Image (cartoon, helix red, strand yellow):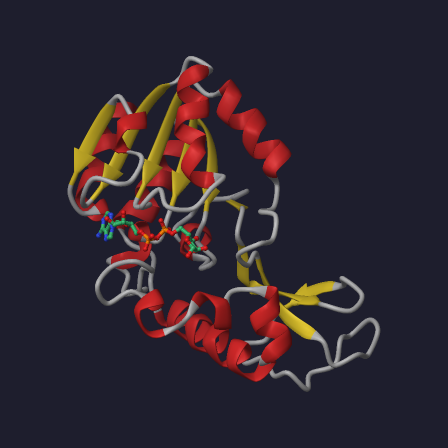
Length: 226
Ligand code: APR
């Protein structure tokens, strides 16, 4: 079966990585406009690098959980397109391959001057020089608010081709990711939302599994893998 899976911060929560909009979420003690916009980076690159260095260290310390591993197992039995909003590499470390990071990755760096992409170091500094053009304008290769998510052509095609669309651990607050379920449903896919609670787009899903990802995702995968 052709299954399109979209994940959000909730799938990594039980690995100890903070989500964004919970009461202890990242956006409770960091202003999005300061650390997750191109304007914030231009204003204070030191603050932005410090924010992503902290998130990169958290992700490096975290381990993939049973939900990440279950999705890798699912892809061994079905034709799975895995799209994530997450910038950690827990899907890859949990055994998934060809993960579509629509909001970029903490492992990637980008030169704001020449566009050169290269592997990020664990700690990035605003004085680092771009390996290609030598300018001190390196930034995390993360899609910030106001920027266009990556791989959208491939994402729309996978959503339209899917027989089933599942969203796991995402609040449905950020588009275009939040609109994918409705798009899949209109294209004829079955839809299921797996989350600790209802999201802003729960109405777009025909089925719901409420509970922690490390419980509901392996259960769902076991059903699909017989
Ligand atoms: N198991 C399942 N779901 C969980 C768990 C868990 N253990 N813990 C939290 N959740 C759910 C919450 O109920 C919520 O719906 O995960 C979701 C987390 O929501 P957000 O913090 O908004 O994260 P996300 O939906 O990934 O945010 C989308 O917003 O800030 C931007 O670019 C950022 O990619 C991010 C995007």
